[in-house]
Length: 170
Image (cartoon, rainbow, N blue to C red):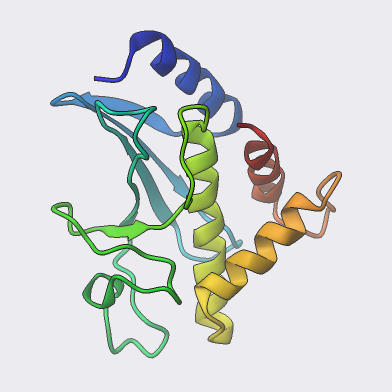
């Protein structure tokens, strides 16, 4: 189980930016919520599991729903994992799409920063479905755009402001 003080801090940070829910089950705290990066687009369930090793161990980040497919609808993403173009690790016992969210980890990184990477991935996947550009390439572009902004222009979705703020948190 995650230390109580750290968990309270994580809940406060996450609730500042989202309406994601925290649930405890068998020593794992699961943080789950829904995001729709594009109006009228796909509604994604983003999930982070805060295992007993958190914050010293990197938590897994998942897309729980919907079932995700390649653009041509020939393969489910869980069947082609791991995949650099889709920025995914191998699936694990959950059989959910498990996302890469950081190559470097330390105990100061917040759950909200991990969630923001998942939200950004949902945006990139939505763009991939429209354009065919690799999710990993879109993520690089989106991250550069967001981190270079002082404030979010009105032309971007409202969720972009929350993502930007979360990316700026530790």
